[in-house]
Image (cartoon, rainbow, N blue to C red; front, side):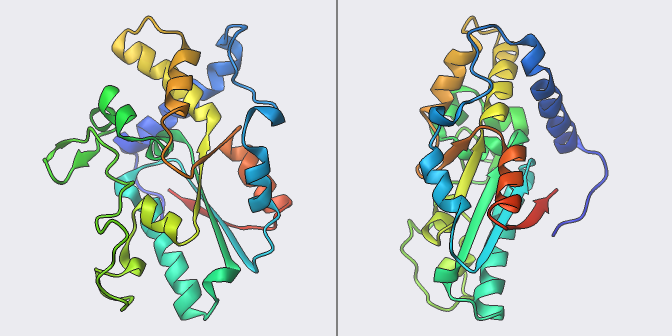
Length: 237
């Protein structure tokens, strides 16, 4: 688990997102859908994770991007549990619960390009050296076609810390609906848009990366996973 660091721009962005989220209920127009009912999201899909019968269950919560640190931490946890402790992959269930700025890892290239997410959140594309206009954290560099079965080899699945690579190993990514609502409002202010918040939210929800489950709110979801699903908890800060 990483250790808390000194205040930074990343920390400021995280606090800003939290502040916006806290103000949502008071400022929301009647048509907003900030508070989701059970029939408004993919509850049956999540319920299968909540009641997973796998022996080892872990939820990793993260609200900062920090060069995709949550992805590396989840990869390392999987490797340690499987190789270091001999737990079969079939007995491991991991959920990555993302909110705050990290919530944007759940959205595709369309959103990153249209809303200049890399510029907003200070994410640089290593291929261009410029602010990312694509979700650099989603695709597997190998296209899931690995050149080695040695877990220590950079060309192996075990060294792949992309979202796509981790999903292929059974990790489920969770997106925070309340964070998305907050971020839609930030984008409206940032670009002086005339669109209503729910228009932006619906657009974002239509552009989640494959396999993501958008949950009503990550904090409540993590609580359910811990209390009902008996998941171990890892906080990435």
